[in-house]
Length: 138
Image 1 (cartoon, one colour):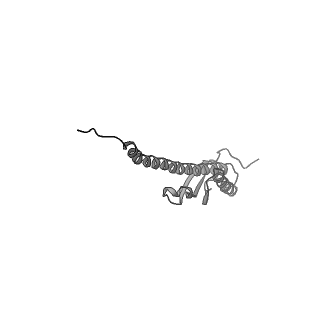
Image 2 (cartoon, one colour):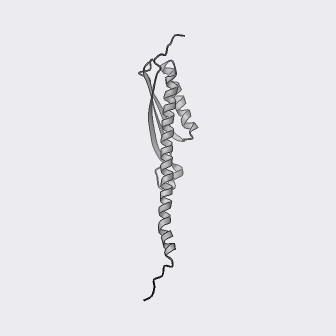
Image 3 (cartoon, helix red, strand yellow):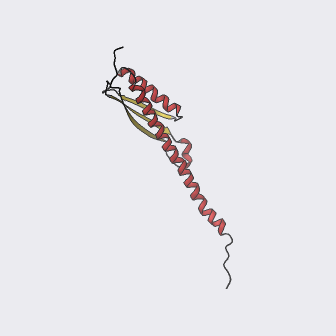
C-alpha cells in the first residue's frame, strides 16, 4: 500500500478559507459604517433637542434646533444627500418638553463594491425637558 500524500492541501485550504475571511472582514466594515451613521444621527437629534430646550420661545427653539441638527451632522462627517430636522414645540413651556426628529439619507457609494445599495435612510428622535423653573421675567 502506498501512503497518501498531503502535498497541495495547504493551497487548497487557503483557496477555500481566504474568501470567507475576506467576506467577514467586508461585512464588519459595512456593519460598522451603518452603526456609526446611526449613532451620528442620534447624536444630532440629541444636540438639537438640547439646544432647543435652552431657548425662550418656540420659534427661536425650532430655528436653533434645525441649525444645530444640521451642523452636528456636518461636524460628524456624515454626508447626507437629503436631511430633515423636524421640531415639535407643542409642549414648549416651563415643565414641558421639546421633541426633535432628524432624518438623513446617507450615501454608501464607497461601499458599492460590497453589493450594498447606494444610500440608506437613518432616523432618530430625541426629547428634552424644558426647565421647570424657567422664567420669562428678567
